[in-house]
Length: 341
Ligand code: XIL
Image (cartoon, rainbow, N blue to C red; front, side, top):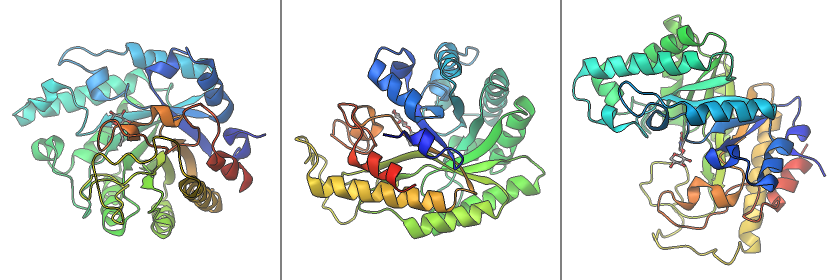
């Protein structure tokens, strides 16, 4: 039977998020899934500021260097994630009160991290999640201290520091009309300033009960019309309900939310498994239809056992959002995705 990367060769790159566990290569079965099925890896956490830049004057590149070595050894491209994000910031930044310190951090961080990996990464998510749901700029330390030109400035600095790396704006729910309009304004603003941008990353954290195919298709078309590539950077499909006000894409308003609700600990019922399969199939069908506009599809994790959705938006749930199960077996969704080609 086929593999993801072989099946979609010539259409788009197929990636997965990985962490320190996978880089240590202690699990040969997981390792083989990665090298058989994926062309690309995204560091799920280890290039984030809190890991790579723990103190004002200290960077820690030990894990990120290992990731780059691992990727090189296995012929995987690396998609850097992420230079500027309001979340997972080191505490020295979260404590900052004055604009000058934030600006110094911002400039030094981008210069230092981006230049270290230029020529080693395929792309950077230069800025992650700078928008609110209504398309306005997200209220964050960067907006407050640097003003709303910070996104343009981040791209400018990233380009100077890493001219050989593709530069992406990355966010969730930007397929939704209001937030999409905000993303388009932001991208046009970067372009109008004469600053380089290669693409936009739609995260793709959806729910099996709500996959906004029409909005996704409109987003692919509209972003592509700006002259940039579209990537799906963090794809997973939650099978569990989320709190009504969760800041993510997998809000499922049809199900009464219960934080303890953990209905599938004995495994997925066939009907839910089927929904997951259908969801992935319809998404990949859409991706294939627009493969001329799409550069990459990245899964947010290799298998269900290591998915962040077991712990978000509440800790300790059992979720089944990926294409491989906890026993590292390909799921029906995996085979269906291969079949649509
Ligand atoms: C998540 C990781 O998967 C978790 O392990 C971590 O605890 C929190 O961050 N949007 C993003 C990603 O851009 O960086 C997030 O990753 C998921 C949502």
